[in-house]
Image (tube, rainbow, N blue to C red):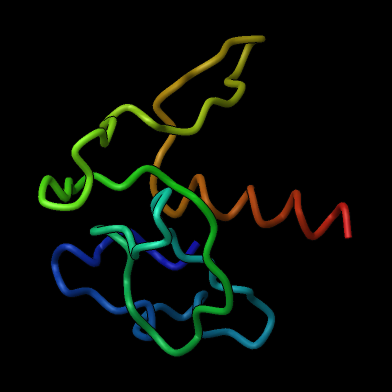
Length: 100
């Protein structure tokens, strides 16, 4: 995961893990392909996958649904429908890479 500090102008270039040659830093994009508001910028980011974008674009998205989040399993056979951020994007890319 590239990090969720973009709203605070954080950069994943300052993250030793994201900048490692042994890591694939993954960012987040919304359903329209725009960078998510929380997504950090840096040159070491190699891919982006879908994740919920916490900022709305009312001038563009008149039908935008703020609850288009990731559904996934939890501990003890549970389920959640509010998994977001680059922490949700990274496992999506891992699954795609496993299938390739």
